[in-house]
Length: 157
Image 1: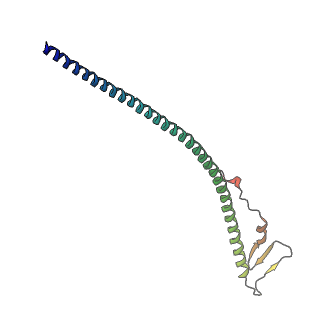
Image 2 (image 1 turned 90 degrees about the vertical axis):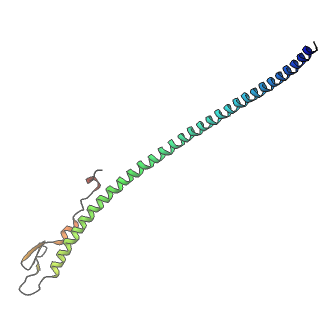
């Protein structure tokens, strides 16, 4: 029986060592599970914070986009107005260039008149026609009082 008693005490020792190992493994398992839960909670919080940051960024960028769109619309309107004014000025410049060219031609014709006795240069008292050589020309100064007809209403964009 001595052997059975020795075996029995060895079994008790090994059984209690097994219990300690089991308890140690259970403690490690519980700690690991608790650590995993904590890690998962931190991960969810990071994801939520990232989502909140992205949502705030979307709101901010939407406002900036609306502001830029408003600036584009304002600038486009100003561009169209200036382009219209520019078109009017181009037409007026063309009309004035044509008038200047006509006046220069008349001035050249007057300066090239042959003042010989054979050619008659005379103003017919208040009459709007004068004679140079064999040709008759209208009064060149009549065109000065004519209005320039270009206006913004002529152009539609």
